[in-house]
Image 1 (tube, rainbow, N blue to C red):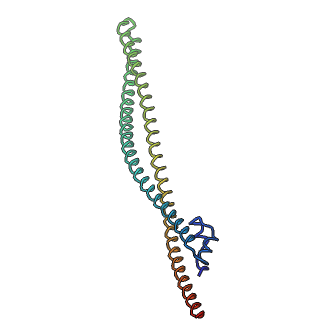
Image 2 (cartoon, one colour; image 1 turned 180 degrees about the vertical axis):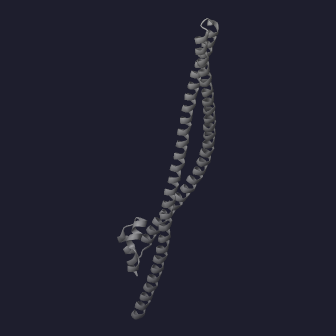
Image 3 (cartoon, helix red, strand yellow; image 1 turned 90 degrees about the vertical axis):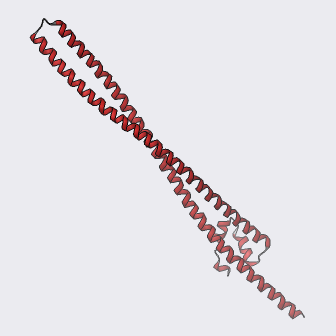
Length: 217
């Protein structure tokens, strides 16, 4: 009967020496059985703790995922708005550039045809300077919006990375939980088999004692 029991696996699972388990099979005692059951109880509690931790992490993951999804939407909306602003600024910049070019051509034509109209020339130069200043302001604003878009993209990437890492942790805990559950099921089966064998050996022992007492009489 002992040959059918994997003593080494039970010893590994319960952290008990193989000699104690072999002793239990040969000459079962209350202390050895109690020690075995205490070890199995410890493993069962560890299994429950792992299961509880898994449930807690799943709840935390769901909360973080929802929070990150909300943040992602806000970041996405902010980035979309920034992109729209940049697009409009580009259009304004192109319009300003076209207007400046037209003003420059007009100035050159006036300079070539009417050298004496200095007042109008000064006005046109002032207009060009104003357009150039507006052009510089637009470029500065465009650069600021581009930096904001880069920052929002980095924040969005970081949030996605957090979600991926949390999902990986949950997957690892699920694998650990499956392993512990499988080990606990195997231990329960082996415990039942061991208790059955002990009961049989006790019956045999009683029968032997009765036979001996009968002979003595």
